[in-house]
Length: 142
Image 1 (cartoon, helix red, strand yellow):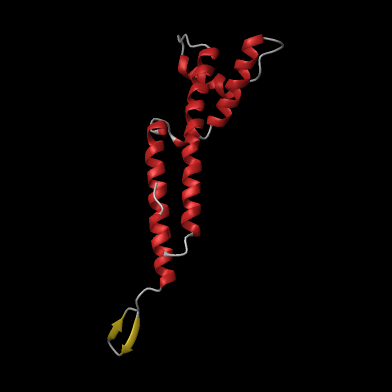
Image 2: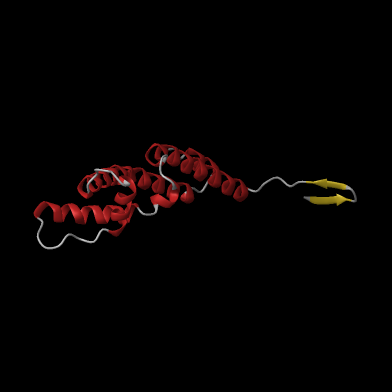
């Protein structure tokens, strides 16, 4: 805000660069919101702290299942899955390590397929960042 004379203020119109920056920020938010909305059904029931263990769960499950197929040597260490299984089974559960590993891999495969949308989100954000005009930024759509 500028002051022309004492007590009188005015606002300069936004520059083209300011308008472009605002349009880019708004479009990136729109893209991220659309991406998140599509991810929500996959992750809605899982707290963030559990999601942070997914890669480890997947690696342990795949190692265990590979061993289970031929049972050569000792079973691989699965400390995370061991604890999950103990919690899932409680004192009288019947779920096996094999059952748990199959469920983990199934969920991981589903989430892996979703990563195509992660790539799409990244491509669209890149296009927005490369836009040289406000109209070009606004034209990018999910």
